[in-house]
Length: 250
Length: 250
Image (cartoon, rainbow over all chains, first blue to last red; front, top):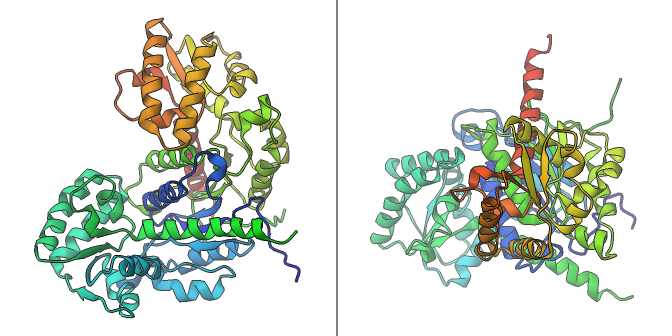
């Protein structure tokens, strides 16, 4: 069957990315894609096409405070990516996944669901219970719960006004590039949660790993980073397409 | 006149980027775009479309060692970006600018020339003389010299086999993510050049600022970062399009 898709000239099929929500979270995702490629030179890295529109209306504001919907601009990204044959599409913003079904319906390419991808890590770690730090919107829409509930994993309910305030304030600080200020708020919270016996903590907003991962904190192995899980899965899928090209009959 | 260009829904016209040469240099460029936006929240950041194809053949290899040409894949990027109304196009790879003329001829959007943009900084700093660190290919094609020669600025000739070896080895280390190892090679070189009275040093390969800028080294003000200059110019142009939208008559 003939296709009118644009083909990018590369052995590995490119990843499609709908980004800019927020910009530093997208950068963190791209950095994790680069690291996950374990490349010795440029050509071993993974190609991608990125629609980065930070003017996309705030997701939490749309869901909880009657703000403008981010859906039209995310649809713009999906529609544009439909012109290409891609390995997969990723959206490095947890709250954006509240519109996952609408976007997948309009997408010709498979969109990876960040929470579904993270669940693989939970099983791999033989995790029994998790707590979730996220925006109030991600929490209210049960983005993670709806996936975790398929497995025999307990969810520690840590939601209260104080926790939500710390998380939301930290996210806004990170969006402004104020990483150390966000760390000062988040570190005591993480300490506190772990001292109450929480086994693992899902960093369920793509801003949070920016302040918490890669700094060598002693509790790092207790933190689950969905951005990293999503990047690793994208790289795995893209590299598999290159393998498939190689084993095709002549 | 009607146009069949895709319009991205954003107040600021998006930047087009041809990236992946190499991936960490592109990330450094995107980080500098984010910082330059001085944004208090997501929506104040600058939208962009990025074609990142790290499988683009090595530029130096093509120019000096008979390797495959990177031009067809860069043309693929330019052609794709032609579908959009953009503020400008940037290519965060100095050596790629050896094909600048061919790319600009095929591009409907204005491509910013990294060396031309950097020259503005030289004038702003009232610079009298510069040395240039770059790949052998950028050096052999006189990418910077051809622009600097229009001004009353001397170019310190620091090219010798030893300097070239250090720079090329460092670039390859940075492409592998080995930043500290590259720093160990580059710092004595920079020290040495400055002790010989070089006034400013242009980091004329987009990998070099990754290892040398933003770490608080005492000689930082002596280093000129073309990646930062290019990012700032892109942000300035994109934000001006938003201003233009505001002042348009109703």
